[in-house]
Image 1 (cartoon, rainbow, N blue to C red):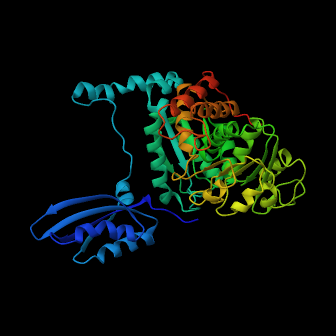
Image 2 (cartoon, rainbow, N blue to C red):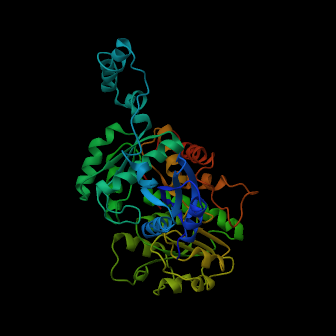
Image 3 (cartoon, helix red, strand yellow):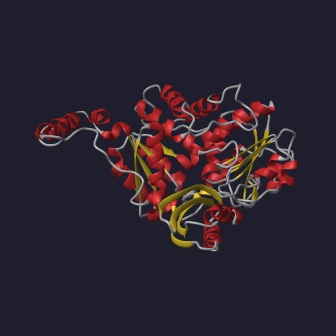
Amino acid sequence: MATVPSVSYSITVRLEVPAGGKAVSLLTHAVENAGGVVTALDVTNAGHEKLRIDVTCAAKDADHVQAIVDSLGAVEGVAIHKVSDRTFLMHLGGKIEMQSKVPLRNRDELSMAYTPGVARVSLAIARNPEDARRLTIKRNSVAVVTDGSAVLGLGNIGPAAALPVMEGKAALFKRFAGIDAWPICLDTQDVDEIVATVRAIAPGFGGINLEDISAPRCFEVERRLRELLDIPVFHDDQHGTAICVLAALTNALKVVGKEISEVRIAMAGAGAAGTAVLRLLLAAGARNVVVCDYLGAVHLGRDDLDESLRWIAEHTNGDGYGGDLRGAVKGADVFIGVSAPGILTGDDVATMAKDAVVFALANPEPEVSPDDAREHAAVVATGRSDYPNQINNVLAFPGVFRGLLDAQADGVTQEMLLAAARALAAVVTSEELGPNYIIPSVFHPDVANAVAAAVRESAGGRARGFTEA
């Protein structure tokens, strides 16, 4: 699928041009002729003979950046001074910081915030450990934990390379829910070591957000931590995705006038996200689902089933279909992809039932071209920001943890996830609902509060453990 210029590849080119002549007017044309988009043009220094100009533009990828720079450099009289990648500039020195909430202006304030006054607070917590939620950052803190084994779509790139992503996650927690989140990037991919480390640091946090840990290890890590800890453990790649998918599907089915219990669903992806999506769909009433991995449909007749795939086989594909994804999609009402790019075509979507729903969520390149899918499906959603109906986990996790922390919950239940999905879907009003608006924007002011309120109510003050369908 052809890409388009994106702010992810935004650059600022500092150049010098003659003060007279056509060079200035030719700069925008040079960028556009190279396929870029000019977003700003600033004169930063002016003289009688020369002008210094910063041209900011969006490109498609690194090669396209170079093509744009070359195009600018080819303009007569232009001298390139510096090319700055705006994304890298944003990340210089990291994206988050710690700030004190209390003033430290004199000895009195220092004595209360630290020694000797703080000793009284420590002794109070020693007598009643539950007071840590009231008297420390524990009440509003989440650890964002990764081992760097499945970062975005980049794969196993390790903990240091995962840190910018975890910083971004922490920034989103703060921006959308006022939660203080801390990146914890572990230099181990051993399940026992991950579990032991998270258990050891847990006293300082009110919740654990597992992130970008590859399947199937992520299932065991989450299960064991839920058993060991008295704070919520939430794997966003699984449950955040599931909440958003169910919310979007709830509204998509309203658009096409179908019921979740009656539709036939074909899924691509049986990993962490796919399994969690499936569990929540079944809990919400889905009855006819076929899940495919890279070997084809998952069914009880396969001889390669691990524990996770066997669970899928036992709860789906009642007819024992053993073919490939294209066969599973034929006649289906819904396709949900959380797998790999370009595995379906518009012709495959054309074989689906009337008023089909297509969620092609592989990112940045979906399972099927959204443009091709829209020719045949009634509703199309992706994980991309340059198409309508973006399904993005930031719609879920800030509000979910806000509700969990406010309720002082010590676990997460399936009912909480369902409540979060219902609340997220309800943010889209009946007047707004349509084929191109089934899920609210991540910047919608009501999203986090609505999800938090639903989770808080479902928690009922305290939640115990995690129960699954």
